[in-house]
Image 1 (tube, chains in turn brown, yellow, orange):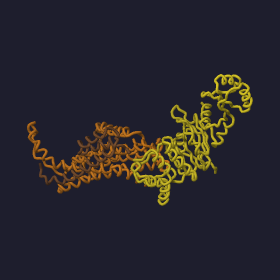
Image 2: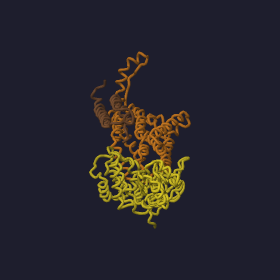
Image 3: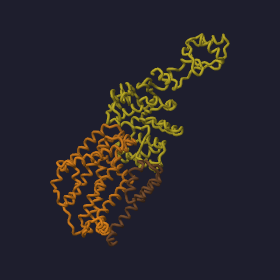
Image 4: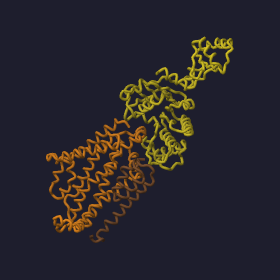
Length: 67
Length: 302
Length: 253
């Protein structure tokens, strides 16, 4: 592992961004009762398992209701 | 310049094999509530969409306030306020924001939009509603639809089945709002609920089989049947049969009532009943409801 | 039209679309220099297993170029994400029937379509700038002495490639009835391009060439090699706009 200090400029914003994305996704899933397809449990699992960005993207494209 | 807000001449439209409109003629005078009645699928929505330039007609012309309607980008829509059967809005907006969008699109200035939108929201009872449209019930959406339609002071308000999907309370609210709006504008509304028409309309037209089969004021339409028919009910089945045999012009309804269409014959029949000592349950002059008139008119065209 | 554009912006912000895209493109932009920075370490840890399979890993040097290589590699991901996220930009409005009221209020269909164009292109441009900006910033910070040739033009080409696909997205939005059809259409255009790319004579003209900005920096391709593709893409964007508008004028809402 390279010096942790050189990686910090990446790590900090990356963590912040991913947490923000995950947080927003979870908030959206939990404040909606119905989804285009799937159910709440499914989307929570998808969002958390694929948390680096794939999970939230999948949710917003496939699961989010239009209104 | 005519006093008719809307004139339709020889309107025809087909979807594939199905001929929906087969020559519709209609005129709507100013400052009236005009009921546009017909069964589901009779072509009411199609006619309205053609008036709004949302559908192209195959044949015929539509004139709104003296100007011809063109399909696609029609200028006549500036005269019209439209309430679709299932109004849908941008759910991320609040009612006031939505009305602002509508007003700006219609080219109103911002001061006018503000005062007019407050007034309209007040009228439909959404004045204090700050929530976004997302959480609105069907009735609230319908009322917002009326506010939106009336925003630009249209000369003509077109409502497509405004009451059909609502519960009785919601229906009454909408009808009240429409009656209030009558002061300012001409209203056309389509419906298959006849009691609504009887309650608030001045004039009406019946669309059936792709044509307007009846048009006039409510009184005129009712007049067509009033005082011509008499309904009679006898106590005993045997008497009924005997009477039917004696006077072949009598008709029997499925309910068992006897109907006489020719009032001149009435005294003679009454004498016959008296002579034969038949028991009468009731006898009454038929007060035709719109329902009866429509059923009759529809049967003729089928 | 200003009012409708404001509605589009409000929608982009309030539905969270802007936030999601912003974060995703930020992460994508961040990954490029991060992966470049991590490459030596990754090589180091895999050295033994690679040696077993007979590969000898020499000294790996990373520089700004490594980061920009990643930039072009991941560009396609960005295009895919934006296409997926914007696939319903027009179609969802038909399906809900929200445009009916806007049209009957007197907004012309051309203005609606034009507003959608501005929204789609604007959002892509903004997001691409985030992606480019983050990669650029970090790369310049870590390898300040490295000079990379033709960076801006190469990046511009990739941006234009995105515009090209989004133009088709808008065109198919005017024709199609649901999101699936729109995405299928854009997918088909892409597939046809990949297929035609096997014909060497055509390569120069295909917008796919625009994704090869890396070769520009490496010097294997020259600016002239991109000109036909740039011209064709611009024409396509304009043509899609005009045809889309004409179709949208006549379509059933």
